[in-house]
Length: 114
Length: 113
Image (cartoon, rainbow over all chains, first blue to last red; front, side, top):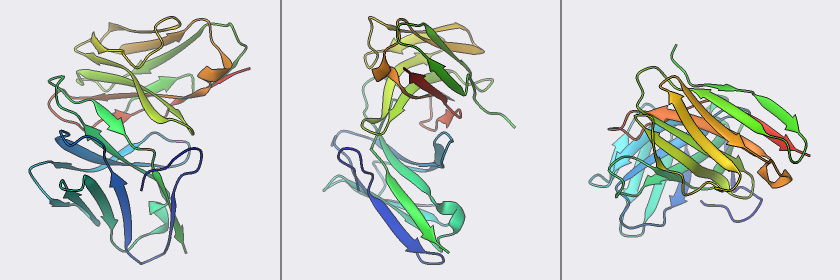
């Protein structure tokens, strides 16, 4: 989920289990959503995206689900691996500028227990 | 292996000093973004360029921050004078105008004492 203040929400998962990271977005007019992964000391890295006319999209080991009714986005990671340990951000695009300008959530820290 | 390059990686400076951060976007990308990341605020958009033209810098404190793209291979973010509250990691990202996928650099960690 989204964080308030200094502490990021943390999700601890056993290696091999599935992970589900949640995100509540703020603007019902947002038309495009992305999940990013940020490893320690690095920049965010694109994982998967979804447009508002879809409710599910699958990638390699990852699935993004979009529920526009409750403005909720989730990222599912199958068979979580130690290399998945990172902070995960959801980002939303608010239409209007004619091109993409992403607003990022505060992030969720995923810790994978070997 | 195309990537966004940022310099410096780390900068420690004293309050009042000028700081310039540089970014080389991926060749062929026509959008460039500057973000600031802190624990309290997360990732905040500071400035956005499309085809080198500044489109949105509403997230940037205008009195001390300035962002420019003197050419397609260089974007700069300048802080003058710097203040301790500017301490953060500054990320540059580039992309294509018709997609939302951004490619981020490794960031410039700024510490203002």
